[in-house]
Amino acid sequence: MDKNADPSNSVLLETIEFLEEQDAAIWNQVAENLGKVNRKRAEVNISDIDRVAEDGDTVVVPGKVLGTGRLDTDVDVAAFQASTGAKKKISESGDFMFIRDLVEDNPEGTEVRIVK
Image (cartoon, rainbow, N blue to C red; front, side, top):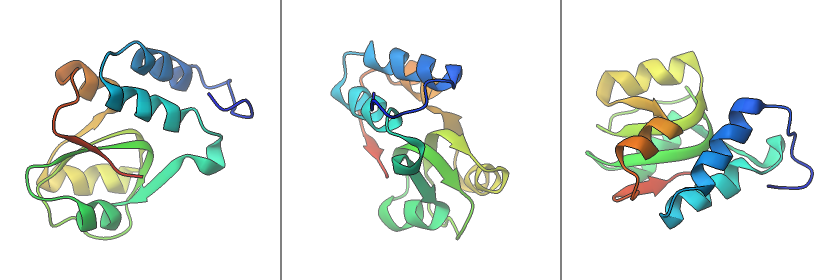
């Protein structure tokens, strides 16, 4: 974790620790990104996901998903946080889940892409 990161968010700390316990390298990368200070943590718009994802993809955002833009792709998205608008748009074409839920469903991290 970044030495300047805010350790007061207990859910964030628990998520990072959970990810670091996993064997798959992708979850360690996600933990590293979540451990950054707030201003360096990913904030990804729906339009960014739509630009890089293809139908059937599963993407993980090590930060927050924001609702700006359109999502025309059938994609499943996992993130630490998401705005209400982003959750609604994702749910119209795919599934939104929190990172921990994705790890429990797919501990190997197969066919998961990081978007940041």
